[in-house]
Structure formats: structure tokens, C-alpha cells
Image (cartoon, rainbow, N blue to C red; front, side, top):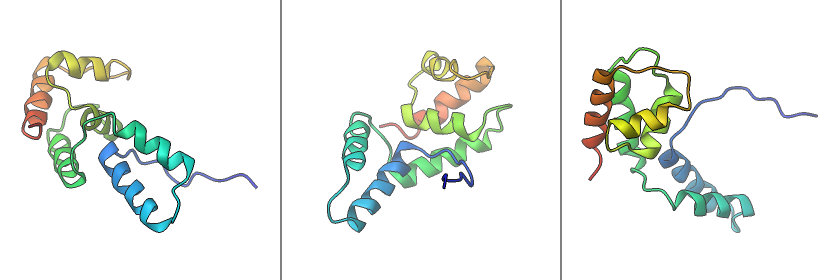
Length: 114
């Protein structure tokens, strides 16, 4: 029997870290995949899950045309410091964002980066 994908929802690395913590509490011995994923996530600076959620909401409220949840999650994961970083992150997608909207994204992200 093949597993069936019921839905796909993008999540941030902060949410994934929180999910891994729940798995580690549930399982007495974490699996190899849990350990490797945790090692990978520790190489990135991420926000706390509640901060990531607030940033997600703020970026969604900007109502930037064609900017979807998957793009916003990637922006939250990588926390771009300037307009060039935003352009680099979004160049992997077929999306064009105006310079004014890129400035809005950078200003919003800066509110959450210490």
C-alpha cells in the first residue's frame, strides 16, 4: 500500500524545530532522521515559533501580489537582511516582486531580527 498525501502545507524551520521537540519527548530514543534533521536545523539561526508566526502574519498582511505561503516561509527561514538577500531567496521561484514590495519585506523582517 502506497502512502497517500492528503495535503501539503509549508512550515518554517522554527515550526519544524518545535515539532522535533514533540517527537523527542514522545520517543524514548530519537531516530536517525530526527538527529540528522536537528543537526541541520542547528546550523541556521531561527526565530522562536511564536515570533515566526507573528512575522508570517505580518508578511501576509502586506498583500504582496503573487507572494505565497511557501515564499513567506522561505523568507522567514533565511531572514534576509537587505533587498539583495530577498532577491536571491526569491530567484529560485517564478515570481517577480517590485522594489517597493522588497523594501516592505526587508523592513518587516528587520523588526524581528535582533
